[in-house]
Image 1: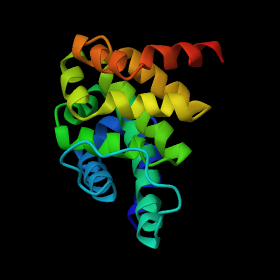
Image 2 (image 1 turned 180 degrees about the horizontal axis):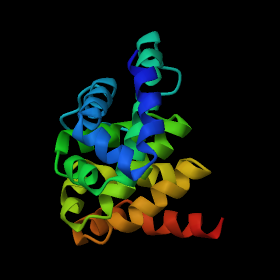
Image 3 (image 1 turned 180 degrees about the vertical axis):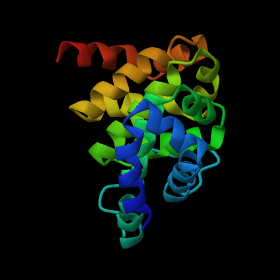
Image 4 (image 1 turned 45 degrees about the vertical axis):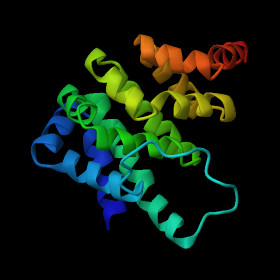
Amino acid sequence: SVARGASASARLLRFPVGAKQGREVGVLQGLLQAVKSAAGNPTAPVSFPPKVGTATAADDAKSAVLDPCVRALAQALKNDEDSVSIVGNDITSLLAVVAAVKCGREGTVGNAALALQMVANRQDCLQRLGQAGAVPALLNVVHHMRGPAQRNAALALARLVKREENLAVLKALHGLDILNCYLKL
């Protein structure tokens, strides 16, 4: 299954050599396709949060694929700069990762936020991240979640707001107040 393949890939992608080889043989592209499909192939920023109690069997099936794929993707981005460039230059990949941030499941959200954090390290990707709706999605995580997901989202936001337009969105959403409260925790 796709989920088992993604879980096995995550073990390989934990190492820089494995992440590079995974990219070269198409593992990264396969993961991106699976994340896009499980996220519903978004072409515009998705609303957040999902309505409570609206999960269906189809949502459960998608999460069974999305969770391990996002975990493997985060590993790839953490260990291979060329993979970061590929994801950061593809708006549909960014939209899918932002949609994963909005799914509400802690592990998936934390890994998706980590993936966005890796992409946000690249100055040339900050505009596309803003266009994909990363600022409000990550801010919502900082505001409503705790633990590693919240930490990863806060770190990704700190990188994203290096671009003036993203900072303006954060300010418009009262994000500085929310981040200030997070820092006091």
